[in-house]
Image 1 (tube, rainbow, N blue to C red):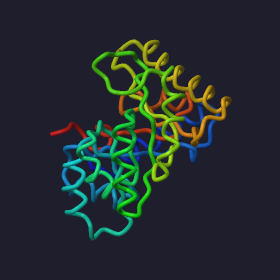
Image 2 (image 1 turned 120 degrees about the vertical axis):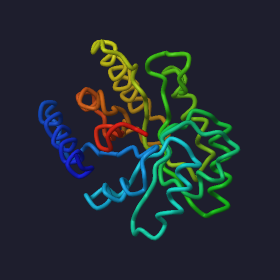
Image 3 (image 1 turned 30 degrees about the vertical axis):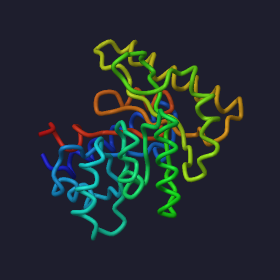
Image 4 (image 1 turned 180 degrees about the horizontal axis):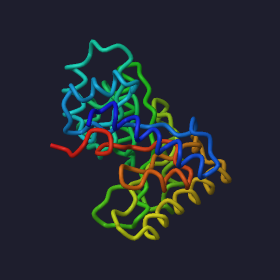
Length: 229
């Protein structure tokens, strides 16, 4: 099955999930996750109307961006954990960063972005499942963290990101998304600096549930590109 065919099927599922949730399908953005995929597959997605792709690792993002730098309007989102010593690479290439959970990384990114005369849209990563092996802030730490980001003028806070628990129990997955919806409302009610209108959550196995709980960006890889190499 081609990338274009899978992409069309995912778009149909997003639209159906939005209609079930009483939401405008235009309020949910699809971010295809192209990690480990070939640049040919990325171009297949681009030809089918996708303008931004998500990558987990900075090095892979940089390599693909360099290979495809001649492609008009192609943009990249870094969606995986970032170490501060790789902030320079991320600042030079990424248009969005979906995994901010460290002031050290925020400071490094801000400094590099300032040097480049750029800005970067960021999402604060939240560990909604309380799994110790996962990156992300505990929900109760987010409000303070968002306040601490104020000095970093090159970072534009757009919202929150999470990875729900990987579980066959729908109730456990729903609980993660419900925590995110509640946290978003808490931040909006408190008038925390930044914009918290967006929720980046939901992947190939759970994006329809995420839409039910207010996801505005769903990060889908396998359902579009097939199994990873």
